[in-house]
Length: 216
Image (cartoon, rainbow, N blue to C red; front, side, top):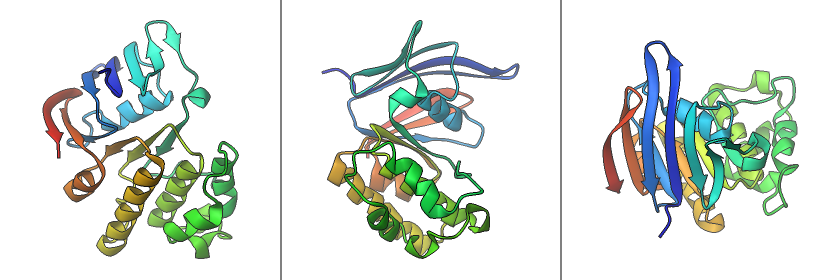
C-alpha cells in the first residue's frame, strides 16, 4: 500500500541549521514532536508551499505537492494552515476572517456552526486586533476548517488556551476529523493533544527524525 504521507525534505535554513527528514506513513494523522527550533514549523510551512525547499518529495493522499522540478502552487494544495500567531487579517473582524475560509469551500459547514463549536460565536463582530491570543488561534482554526482542506496543518493550535477549554476544543477537533475524515499534521508539545488526535508520532531534533513512536 502506498503511504498516505510521504515527506522527504532536504533544506538549508541557515548556515548553522538544515532539515533532512524522511517520513512515510499510511496513517492519516501524524504529529511532529520535539524541542523548539528543531524544524517542526518549517516543515509545516514547506508542506503548505510557503517555503520551497532545495530538495523534496512531498505527497499527501496520492497528490504530489513537490517532486524534483514538479511544484504545486500553495493555492492548489488545499492545505488548512493554523499557526501559533493566527495568520489573520488584523484590520478585519472575526466573521470577515472566517469568510475567507468559506470562499474556498463547498459549504459543508457554516460560519455559525463552526463559531459555536470553537466558542467564538460571541466574538464574530470583534476586530482581530482586539482579540486575545487564544481567541485568535480559534478564529484561525475556524478559518482553516471552513476552507474544507485536503489536509489540516496545525502548529500548537491550542497553546494559548486554558486546560478546560483546551480539552473541549481537542474533543471538537476529534469530532471534525471523524465527521469529514480530515487528515491532520499536528505540531505540539502537549502529549495529551497528540494522544487524542494522531496515530503516528515523529520526534525531531536538529532538523532530523530521531525517533518514530508509531501508533499511539
